[in-house]
Every structure is written in structure tokens, then in C-alpha cells.
Length: 99
Image (cartoon, rainbow, N blue to C red):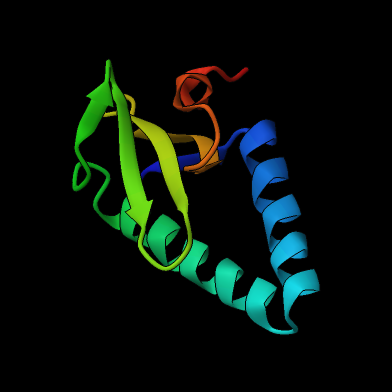
């Protein structure tokens, strides 16, 4: 079993995106949450499934919504850290810059 953490900024991005989608159409925010939760579960179950993109950062693409989940898997420590739930139309340089 792996330790799984979502950084505060990533959680904020996720919550704000879900609220925005829900305002656009009732139920859409819920669908967004479901899609993200399924992808997070895949990451928990198979942390090495998605490719490394920059350094140790891995990216899991969300096909239905324009988002990617950026995370690091520390294999020796058995820790997964979600760095960003990132809208793909934003500046790609900032997706790795988190606290």
C-alpha cells in the first residue's frame, strides 16, 4: 500500500474546477469529480503506469476534460504526491511549480 497525498494547491484547483463545471451545467461538476476520482484510483493502484515527463513528474491525461494530473511517485518510500490537477490550456511551465 502506498501513502497518497494531494498538495493543497492541487486540491484547490480540483475543487474550483468542479464548482465551475457545475455552474456551467448541472451534473457536469459531479461528472468531473467522478472522472478525476477514477484516475486518482488508477494512480494509487498503478503509480508507474503513466510516463515521466520532467524529472520525476508523471502525467496522467484526463481524456474527457482538458486536465492532467501531475504527480510524483517515490518508489522507495512508497509515497505518491499529486502536485497539480492542471488545466491544459494554462501555461504548461507552471504545472510543475508547486509548494
